[in-house]
Length: 314
Image (cartoon, rainbow, N blue to C red):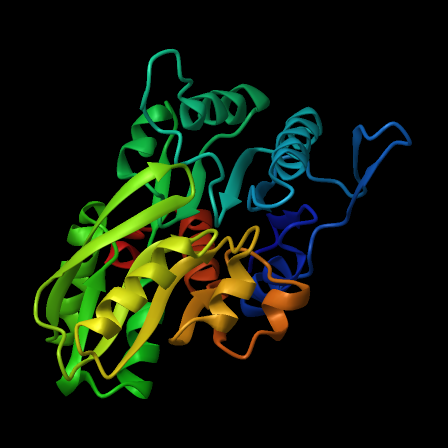
């Protein structure tokens, strides 16, 4: 049925790629992704992919540069092995926050990554919850930006009392996302006004909206060092909320994030497996991991059969 499809993965998403293959009823592609003694990335495609529709599942997450190079070299190797169509499936698109010139002489690294993927031989790209929608315009090839919203909504509906729930945007930039999420749940909306003094540092100023005696759910596309959500949770709690939880797609959770989460008043952090968690993050009792494999496998199948995937954008 899917005999002309192959799915490969680098080292960052092997478990997710395996879950996708199981849902599609196919075996994972056979490739050796390792390093030479000097640290150079080594890729060997150990099966015939000539004329096949190939998908490479690889988030450009920690270690970001290694993951990116693995992806680029795998795409190049598949192109030189005469694959018919190569689609990088990038659940978490690293460097997405560098999507504009925020200061003089700053790079637009999200565009650079797009150029690198295209030059390597990608024919189309699939990602989940891009940090900025305009990144799709950085590519001159088709880009499918899928959303984890249906998965997150289903979990919230099953496990939260939505009659007393308020959705909170941790900053003004996430208001559109939070408003759409709140509308789907029939919940009210609040916004945390903050001022960022330096990268990965933020100072919460005040809460816009009535959170008193409500269960608050902070919604964001990613949690990195957790400084923003922890300070936002404190501000919301100080305004009289019963408890505060967090919902996000990408659990970057770098630096002091896990220690901050453990010592915070946050009740639960709901995330997806776009980024594989290890060690302290996986063992943290406050983190609930939901699988994105169902959405990705359905999108991959529809692309293979040249069917519409518009319904997955909702």
